[in-house]
Image 1: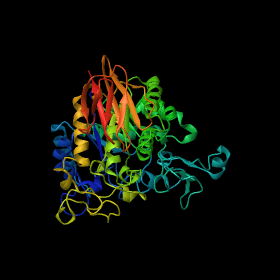
Image 2 (image 1 turned 120 degrees about the vertical axis):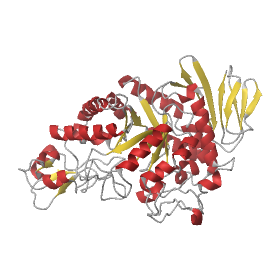
Image 3 (image 1 turned 180 degrees about the vertical axis):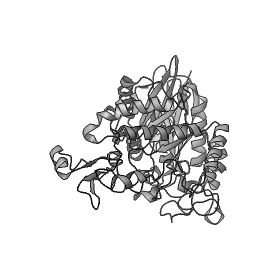
Image 4 (image 1 turned 90 degrees about the vertical axis):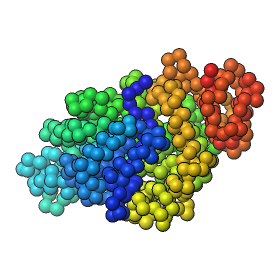
Amino acid sequence: MSNHPRICYEIFVRSFCDSNGDNIGDLNGITSKLDYLQDLGIEAIWLTPIQPSPSYHKYDVVDYYGIDPEYGTFDDFKRLISEAHVRGISVIMDLVINHTSANHPWFQESRKGKDNSYRPFYTWKSPEEIEALGIATREVTPDTWDRNPWHQWPGNSEKYYGLFWKGMPDLNCDHPPVRQAIYEIGRFWLEMGVDGFRLDAAGHIYSEWEEHKNYDFWEEFRTEMQKANPKVYLVGEVWNTAEKIAPYFKGLTANFDFDLSLAIQKIVSKERDTVKIAALLAKNRAVFAQTNPRFIDAIMLTNHDQIRIGSMLKGNINRLKVAANLLLTLPGQPYMYYGEEIGMLGKKPDEFIREPFLWDYRQNDRQRARWMKPKYSKSKTVVPLVGQVNDADSLFNHYKRLIHFRKSNPVLANVHGAIEILPNTDNRIVAFSRKVSDREVWVIHNLSSETLTYTALYMPNELLFRTNELTRFVKIDQLSLAPYSCAVLGD
């Protein structure tokens, strides 16, 4: 069994839990909910950025060695880490090193002119150079729609490169002092006790025309981080196809699987496996394994940049259960986005996919972060946690049962292992087997609202797990699947 966490949970810190009544989620709020997360079965939490920043989301850092006072203090953070570790929960911190805030002291120096020693911390080029290199505009990518990444700063004849926005200038990692600064920052937090990093915009450390340099950068980054923690866990955000993600496994422990995320959303909403999801995943995993046989595929339904799965599936609890069934039986390392377990809703713009977690009904919810007025996730539209805990049929309890079963089964729990497609002609059914050394389980999903029968010769004869009591063997080679249910079979 890999020593890496198996079930991970992304927390948008501002929205999770407010401990001091200032309406902003904070570190102490997270600490107060560790028992909840442990009970759910979570083994790692990924915290969105906690360093000082002028924005509500904090993806533009002004001080890499600080904690934003809105979220708490170093003592609060150390206590969160130690309380998490006592419960067997790893702490993964969002590290934003592709760019800084334009308010960061490095950039404030850099913009002063060509002779400033911080000038090369960022990429400045004259309009003529940009034109000559043919890099004035770029293709739109899923993670940024900005076609014009070059920005003017008053008093400068050169423009600076900022892929995401003019307020987020990109660092120049070809400049050795920048690399050293990044490595020192990483080691500082690892020495404080964090277990690893989620690496924002990992595919954009170098711009598109030099993408190949990213792979070596992450290899070097890992080597440097291992000096502080030999078991450091690094998960990358590379929003791309499997072929493009694969080289990042040279340096990174894990990478997010956006292809799979989109495939799950599609087949669950259509109630038809039009993408042949098991085959897609088997193919992608084979591609990753060529770079690194010990790769970890970080799988998810959605994250803080995507329309919430709850809204994607129009709040349909049956379909939300199917999405959970798939996420928690497929191979890889599942990540849940906070609130998915209670069916939270949210659509773009981004603030509304990052709405406050609903702990209790409105008037009783003392821990709700009220930094924004929610548009989608309210007590009227989503049953708060308190209303789901004692309901055996709730989405929350469905997640909890699935998570605990996944962790208890050595084949499903393994983040590695193979996936193989099982014979099946009905696209309302997803059928695959998972193998780890000599052990095997079969997983059969019914995506639809009808009771379906799955038939196969030599089917394993024991029903290890089912999400619906009506799912059962009708004959030795025939399994009757209740609507929207899944079953795990073994010998």
